[in-house]
Image (tube, rainbow, N blue to C red; front, side, top):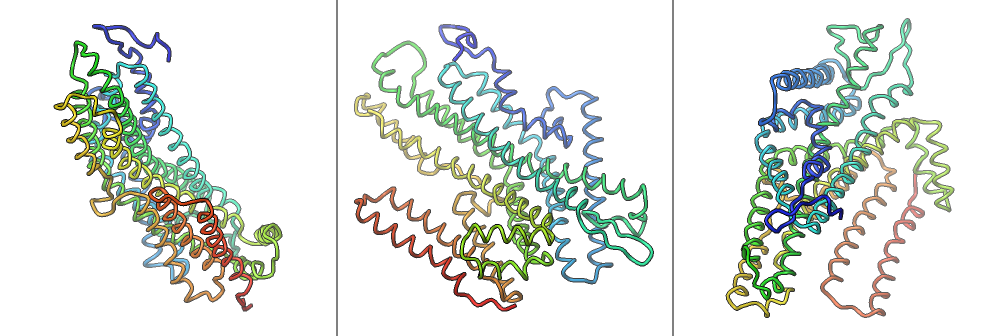
Length: 498
């Protein structure tokens, strides 16, 4: 750590570059807030008249662009389109638009909650006085930035593929006297002719712009969750470091605040901050979990419905003897079918899956990190403390038994168990689709693999509390691998009808 980043004030080191640290921590959230025009609502102390005016213009533009997609699409689904398959195909994109509008409203209405959370983060960076503690906080700030970057890569890639590449490379349908040029969403045909130039180009550009806005709204929710929770984790690690130094501090009996009092005070601040984060984001979490679960199922359905692909795919699975040959043959078939659509759907599916995982993962690490306060309170040499101070640790241990939790609308607890449940909803959807498609060996395999994935996780948790010798562990793993081979045998033995 660079010692020039600190000055000595009253015998203690103070961070003099906290503004750079705050900028590093909140930079991505600030970008996204500004893109959708909500930044002045969460930065009321420094906003100017010009910022308020720009915010009003941006919010109006974003809402208008979302309505420009939602209203014509609803009109097309309920009053124009008669084909049920096409209606279902429109549900996924329009549900993403509606969910984005709902999240946008909540992000605007909860501006004062976000401001309170951001001010708490700023205060923590200003008051950090130890180079080692600042290193911990920077470490977790880096983790949040990496999570946000990966999340943004998947989400923006999928949305851009859907709004641009998939439309450019789609097959244009020719009528008797005209050619139908594809759009990501139905155009406002009752008012305008969306197929004529330059109307088509304008509508296409608005759809792309709106896609980026909706993507930014969704990314803002992920960014806030990742930034706030990783900041809490950094603060927890600082308290754990203080706990390990507690015995030595008591033995020195130096002048200054009681170290245990500082730990208890800061721990209470962490719990208060965790509650504020949960109150600020729980409605957005709920909207995102419901949207992602539904879209994961719909994207699977869209992959099944891709023309010219399914009639060959399962036959290739049955006939191929080597996985490498199978992959090559599948890609060869994709060259003759709607490969771009499949790649887009798969990218979006990975994006939604990963983003739900991010929400559940940050909820899990928040709960686990807050539990560590109690665990480490017992691990220190508490028996070397004065009896009165040792008794005080009981309060920390007791409170850590009920750690804060992130919830989606106070209904769904965000944890890795919740993520497994969302995956099982995806599996149940394959059973519904099976009633229409009798060649679903691949999806039975996917369901079986997910089931054994949950089994692996349960098995790993069991190993954490049980002591198993090497021979028994090898025997158990052998049995598990034998059952996993059932997937390949099942695909080979299933009779696929053409």
